[in-house]
Length: 270
Image (tube, rainbow, N blue to C red; front, side, top):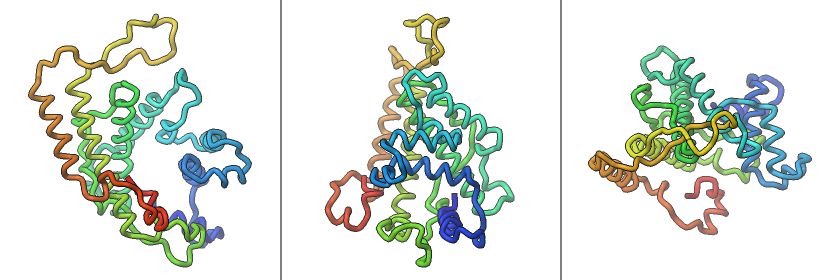
């Protein structure tokens, strides 16, 4: 999304700077409910963070955001389920194709590219965390890797008061660039994760349960017991090492200092 345009619309509240969909507004609220200071949630009438997240989730129902919410571990429609739905829709509208080859506006090309890579990152991390097969195959898309120019890096205008002064990220171009670089590094390591899952894991049906008595997914990733291609494993290790060694300074682990807190850099601290 174009953050500055969105905040400009919210700031004026009279439609003079355009309009935004209520769905998008509620989606932003849902995403923020996981990070906002608890004091503000209590002022809004929520006793717990989970209650706030659930409330906004029920208003939003955006497929990609739905991968961040489940009530119980045994939900039939779990994170992996909603990720599959989101990716299916992404393929349907052509997000997996290089937008640079189209006649779309530059802003729309950047937006589609960011959305697609967010799908890729979420797909890989869910596969890794839940031991489920990834839905997106490397050979099924041709969208280039993210670049810094794909992000809308722009300082919030001084006359916009919808965001308090304590939030320095929207006003600091350097911090926005660092956040973009971190996102790119995350996308790159997710490519490594994809190669690793493909080389070292296979999909099997879980035979420890009776298939007729479950509504849960019956397939999982299991480590290959016999690694026939040791060379490919070594290649994965070298790929991860190369990624780690090429990380920019802002992406490297460091100790958070009091100055970081004072300057509002906790948002992008690694």
